[in-house]
Length: 187
Image (tube, rainbow, N blue to C red; front, side, top):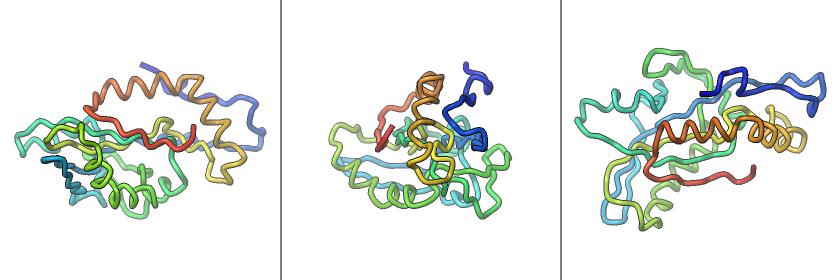
């Protein structure tokens, strides 16, 4: 397991005046997706606006349904500035206060709008009910919330090479998704 100290360190590729955003944007299960005869129906959790569901809490959260679910995992590159704009009192299932959320802006709206079409076009996905897990390959905001030309790519590559890849693989192994949708556009 990688310690917090190993997960991020600052080197001289950034000006000394740069205050890096070192806030981790955690992975989240946003709802269930049902696949039947090549079609899919995504249902966002009814408590999504107030409850952040970490993958570790997924089984406990759905235990009353008495079913076991695999994950379909959507991989994004790193948090955008919208992920840090939480306007309500968001708590995780275990009561932790959450101040960041994956796909909190246009990315989240696009996932909701297009996930059924994308999944329906993937004929190799077995019928079943899956938790829809969203995760960033890099959990830190690589752009630092400013023009992406300045830091995004350098920070992403630095982090990936210095432990981000290892930590990403650890998280994937821990969650063990049955299917992975790579939605990384750069990086």
